[in-house]
Image 1: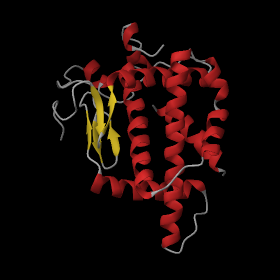
Image 2 (image 1 turned 30 degrees about the vertical axis):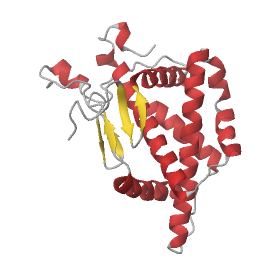
Image 3 (image 1 turned 60 degrees about the horizontal axis):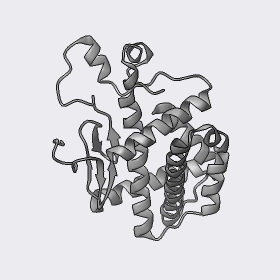
Length: 226
């Protein structure tokens, strides 16, 4: 499998899948990663862009709650930022040619997005692709140091994720607004989006990261992807 296919395939999968207190994240911040932050406004833009892109790629509008869309988008943004910070620390510079190739592979989707969403999607795609390339190179280096050659980009990506996560635990503090979940063991664990406890069966279903189309259909229009 080529690197470009890995990048395109991983992004498609992300689009399809889409102990903290309220004071741990800065006001107006969806997440704080070291000295960098992801604002609520930026998260909203990216969530809408990814939601629209998913609908374009599938060809059929997908029922997805806005909370699930934000959680999925935040997971992409946090992981991309962590990979970029790791790359800067380790001197790993991703190939801009390959990044441009990943963008080109999604050009048809980009062309169908409104201008504002197109900008957010392309910026997110570029950073995600850079992060993936950094992880692949980090994984190849890690495997080579043990006398093993990566047999595929996916194998290198998995190894790179492991070394990056180990570095993050030592060097980067991640705070996530509890509305969106918790950052645990290198990954964003989705939450219900509320600080209260779900009691009814409807509320319990809604506490899932992806509660399903039947639950989403009961939401008002302003709480769904469109």
